[in-house]
Length: 506
Image (tube, rainbow, N blue to C red; front, side):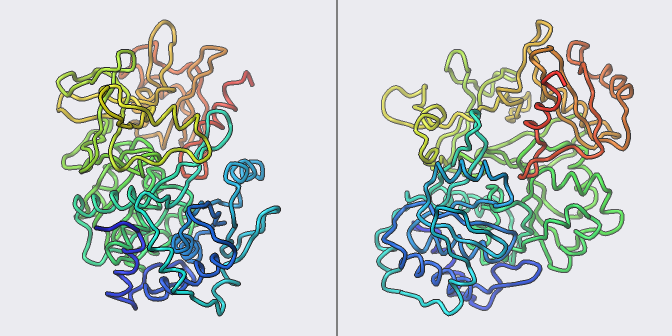
């Protein structure tokens, strides 16, 4: 029975110590060296105090050093919190005030933060000793319920929330991935997601379990996708687990007209609703690869359901979010009645809820928000059973598949009608001349605002097409054209910024 994610690292290091575990554009570490350097980091942490299950911040970059620091924190018996120090100072301060970390570790390019003991990767591993006796003592006390990492997400009050995830939940995730998906014999994961975005968790720990390689793709290549695919071919990337936005960039630039992936066998995507026209572009151009739609919020350890794309979809269709992973239950709850919605009730909207080992430990140092989202299962009055209420709305289709409908907070009352903004977005994103689009609602003026990315402004053309697909009360009232729609740091459309810009009477 596996109880600690380090068992994956150590098994791979023992089996193939010279195999490359992680690479960036400038540096690479074998499994043996990764294990050794992580132990150096842990031994250094041990000299700073007798910490256990305490937060240690890692100031990250897209580099090998960040992963070494992560695993070093784990070896020390604590949990790591990745923080991008290019974020606004105010947000970083809010995160630090929530955490009160015992230590800050800097990767290359990081910077010291006032008020917290700080050390850098270079100083630690340059001649750092390993105290095996101390590390063995730490491991003897370890439990699979110990926290492994915390990732901060946005909070409705303006204060970021730190989602705390245990070893047990990550072990469950990668074991289910291994049972479910046809990974290549020698997987090379093309890492796209920032390390403070939970999509990257799947790259790191699936690779450690399988003895694969995490290939950290330089961020700038996603701004110049003509160079992206040759780089992936050079590094023999055969698995990608990317945010939808990254696949969309490749499709928008028609990147495959110049160069196609030579080694890709598995293409997974998550984070936002995948426009089917983008999926179709990938399926038409990446021969023989399996494509998988993944669903799940950070709070349930990345993903709780999957859909292996096994048939053609038209551009105006919606992809299912599919089947729950083993050892996980995903169900729909009637919000008003707290009753179960069955597959025999297609079209009936409910909140997507999740239970199982995948559930996070809650929000760090935030019991109120934890109690709001991680709740007693209302279908079970007999014994304690926690579920996570995702805030996502879903419905079963006539085919029995589960579909994402919208966020609860994307449902509006407009002109006397209840409208899912996501339904408008699906219709617009199906249009060939639109790169991407999203809707925000101006409550004060009662206006639906459509923000879209296209080569040129085409408001009238959009209206003409929507007239064929949606009732008039669902048509947007205002249009905002972007040559490049703003994205947040996790590669998703920045709906908060768009709402601030377009919904305050400006």
